[in-house]
Image (cartoon, rainbow, N blue to C red; front, side, top):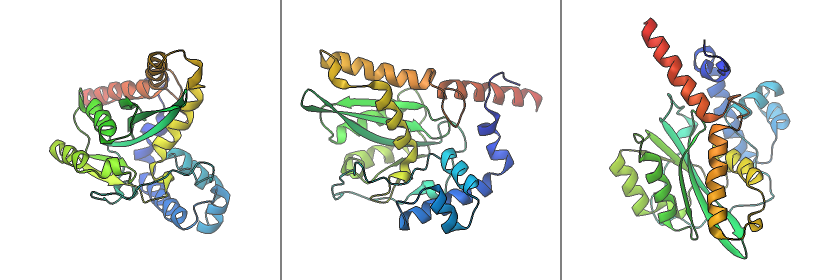
Length: 258
């Protein structure tokens, strides 16, 4: 036994993966038709126990669409891919990544932060920061993620033009990664990243408190490092990096026993 290890998440696959995964699929399908439903209305719509619906939504970082800050999508010029997260679950660390980017306003100008998240460990494994949100922003984030790691089996994103671009698609194909995409206007289908950015912006605070852009960029990296190594994840019950390390130790122990 590893002290402090979150057995809830690790043994999730052994206890009832099919039931919870099926419930996840039902919730996401219902949200496409009723994007404003919370867990109570979803439970009524699906005729399920509301505690079960809420638990599964928390487990997979599914959040209903709130009309507070609607993301603007440009019509993709490249390829659009199906959402494999609706049918595939991560087999372990490094199997399925989720990617997205957000923006910060600093002294009247925009700064864009792109991240790549491991959906199994919830760890941020790739980061890119630029003053523009061209394709290079998301390419840099993916390159950062695979620099010291094997490429994932699947990488998920929204249908932003950056992720549909020929250059980004060519990179994923070269790396042997299968692309997955959320439906337009369905942010909960990339709930892992939506949840991360909400906490990230709270932890970062007001960008305009920094005297220079360099100080802001440095703090962004520090905030992501804090999230990975020290911030307790609500689902994992430990920080993502610690969860990954404990997972690796547990696997080694199991291999010794077998």
